[in-house]
Structures are given as structure tokens and as C-alpha cells.
Length: 352
Image (cartoon, rainbow, N blue to C red; front, side, top):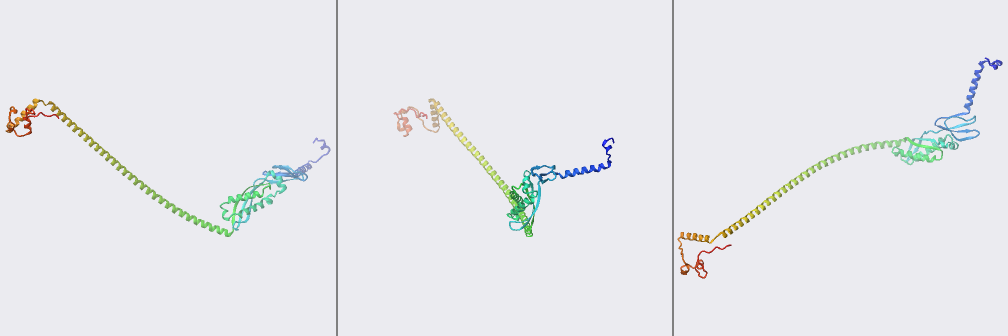
């Protein structure tokens, strides 16, 4: 109200609001024309109409491009692209393959990628090489192998595609086989094969079960026979041990009886020897104890017995008796032989 300019040049306040809006919209348009945004997961290269394409990689964010510049945007995240490829198997049969390739550009080589190929690098490089590599690999495999060694086939396609795209500033991560479409004749052949395999598998299961049953029966029979044989062997061993024990006992008894007999015989022999020795000692003692008086007494006892039998006994000096009166008996002849000088008919006992 006290502004000198306003006092000197009075302005209606209603005209200031449209003017301010015009200035704001003009500034926004100016900024929009000279700026570009790089989204997260993306990288860019600044292209200036006067300086050309810049080597420096532009990071995500809002960047000034000038009125005549732009930013070439590249998605550097892993991108999956699916292809449906018509090809033939090793047998020449038609196959429809659903394959997926995962790729992304090499960030450090975005300048070369943009200058040599451009942002449409999949359509220009990866796609054609991918389809060609898939057809080449599947042409060397049978359609029967697709479900058995699919991982090996995927690795072969991946290796061939990397070889084909080498130096093209892109990174191939993996190849996946998502589906296979067979021609009608292949589908029928596969169905017949699956049915045959199922029948074969059922027959195999039946045969395996029967073989297992027989095997178990044979094992059980063998086990029973083994147990029986072991029992018979143990019984035979027991009988052998019993017979051996009996033989040992009989041997011990025989040895004991023989020992007893030998001991008894030895004792009896010793006893006989001792008795004979005792008798000899007794006779010897008796012989040593026989005196002339005892001999005379025995002689008289003998004469007494002769007298009881009616015998004639002549007592006196026999040297004066004629020899013819006595029989020619050696005992009498010797008794009355003057040369021998025997004066008594009784002989002196001889010691043995």
C-alpha cells in the first residue's frame, strides 16, 4: 500500500495471478524439454547433437540433456525372452519347441553395444542366433531324448549361443526348455511307447515280485535246512563227545583195574617173597638151634616108634656083630663098616 512504485504505477492485483501461472508453466516446459530420467535397473548414454554419443554411462536419476540432446536407455536387468521354434529331430520329425533365454547387456560395453548394434540388440543379434543354435542342437538329438536329457540339451544350446554372440556385448545367462510340441505321428508313437513301457513295467513288477517270493522261499528253505543240519551236527558232536567220554572213562577204569591187578600181584609177590624169606629164616633159625642133645632125643623117639611096630632093636657095640646078620642095606653097611668109623645108625643132619 505504501510502495512508491505502486503509487506511481497502479496495477490491478487480479492481473498478477495469470502472469505468475504463465511463468511457472513456461519454466516446467523448459525443464521438461531439456531433461531425461533414467529409471532404476536401467543405464543410459547421453547423446548430444553437437558433441555426439558420450562414453560415460548415465546412472539412474534425472539428467540434463539440453534442448537438442537425448539419453539412450538400456535395461540392464536380467530379461527373459521366450521363443517358439519349429525344428526337426534327428529322425527328421517335426517338433515345436518352447524355449526361453535369459540375457542382459554388458554394462561396461554399453557404448560399443549402442554404436555397433543399437537398443534393439535382441532382435538384431540374440534372437536369430538363439533360434539357429536351438535348431542345430536339436537336429543332433532324437525326440526320445527330450524328456531324458533336457538339461544336457539346454546346456548345449547355451554354450552354442554364447559362442555365437561372443563379442556382441551381451551376456547370456541360461536357456530353459519349457515345452515340446510333437507332430501327430510322434505323439502316437510316444503314446504307444508309454503304453508299452507301462505294460513292460507292470510285467517287470510281477516278475520281480514272483522272483522275490521264490527267493524268499528258497532262503527260508535253506535257512530251515541249515538249522536242521546244525542241529544234526550238534547231536553228532554230542554223541561223539559222549562216546569219547565213555571211552575215556572205560580207559580210566581199565587203567585203574590194571593198576590194581599189578599192585595186587606185586603185593602178593612181595608177600610170597617175604613169607619164603621168613620160612627160610625160620628154618635157618631152627637149624641153628638144633643141638646134639636134641638129635639124640629125636633118635630115641624114633627108636620108640620102631619098638611100637614090633621091630627088633639091637643095642651094643655093633663092631663086634657079624655083618652077615644084617641085610645088605647101604645104611646098615655104612653103619657097620669099620672103615667109616660110624658108631651110631643115626646120621647127623646136614645144613642147607
